[in-house]
Figure 1 (cartoon, rainbow, N blue to C red):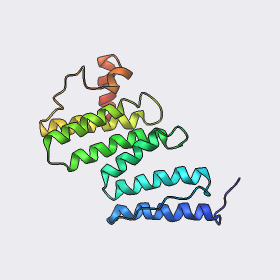
Figure 2 (cartoon, rainbow, N blue to C red):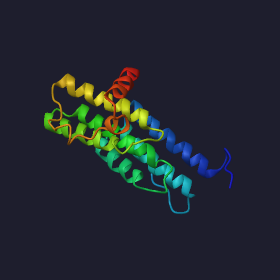
Figure 3 (cartoon, rainbow, N blue to C red):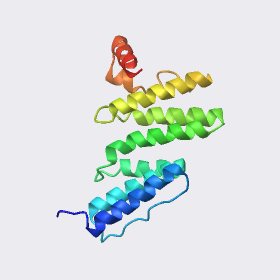
Length: 173
């Protein structure tokens, strides 16, 4: 079925997207879930819109839970990006916490989540986010305290050679 600009489902999607972006300038406007009568594409998109609205409203805990649920939904077209977004949300949580132990835990969890991006369209974004995590840990002087064997490294798995990892790191800067 084709949908046009005057289709009620398309108009509902646009209305909700406006709500999502309204959170970027402050406030908390969360779109409502759509019912079972809505087409599957709108229900899946709405799940993503709601998660994004929580993210932009800086309710990172709720956003993380919702992105995680989407990443585990094999029918969602947003599944792959939500693995990355869970990690991004964890980095935001780390940024806003003052507790060094919590901060370290958030960064470690983000690294673990990024390890799920073993390839695909968001691997490069994940590598850049991993660079940010490492930079922030160095800036605060608080590495995770975990040994290299415990800490997941998407770089080591994807690029086993140290020179390959160095080349990638230089390209990211």
